[in-house]
Length: 416
Image (cartoon, rainbow, N blue to C red; front, side, top):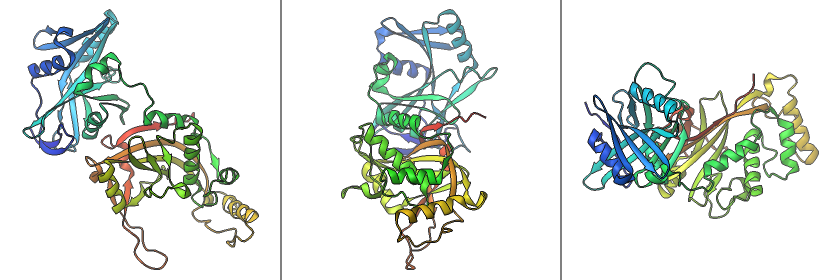
């Protein structure tokens, strides 16, 4: 039964409707249309197997092709699959062994057409390496509505999913360039975050007083804040954007560095015209506070998307250590800099972090396709004067494992 699921139209609108998978002959036609009839040949194998051979110069590709369809109830309506028959792996292994110059690809084809928007075809390249390890039975490769949306938006979008599979979604007009390797060579925003992660303090235990002193020495305006781990992340990211001269692409606009025209978020991606927020979160916490509901919704509708960039850390609380050294050290250091500081040395002792170790980061994108599933209301209480605070969203960290939201992830492997 062809059940309703999420569909992406040619103008990237979201509809709930049955799938429209292409038949075998239509799959062949779609590939030949975008790769060129003179460069394609269909290799048939009994009983009903076929491979599309694509030649471009001295490069030869063998494309093993299936349609993308919804998994069906009870799976989420944003999750689709491509069924990979056992013979895909058998064929790929044979070609790798006998004709290693031929590049074998597992290709999914998403199709949806309506009378208003017309035909929409998106190709999905499932990097075969991880699927070749699945022996002895048919398997499925999964792709999400947001992955398809990203492919439509960027032309070519690639990521590693939560299971370690590399998938790339390709807008139909970009298929030939993608296979030829003629994609844009400039650094993407994901490349810039990779560079930051490479130089960031992943895997190191950061002690509170060391971090506080470093931020103060470098004149970071929020150096004395109690939630020092989050402010350290923002300090380091701002420093990275300046030192690497990428502020025309990514600007840190939080704290006192915000311009009059900037909205109340941490990051401004000027080149692609949208906002984001940096979050440092205890990896054991199931949720992390988001932003003001009204501001966030306006931001998504005005700019099309929003990024939460979440860095997770292991945490040792000061209450778990002896003598509350971090609490006392922080308050004594602030007083040594500012003699007017009036709080006692045990201020904030019940919540103070003694040290943290960053181990993981994720970027979740909220856009008009997916945001409703990611956010929940956050009850943040009242203002000091008793008035209600503006409603906020909470980020349920289950979304960090959900490939319909995550567009980039990094995990630091700690040597045991």
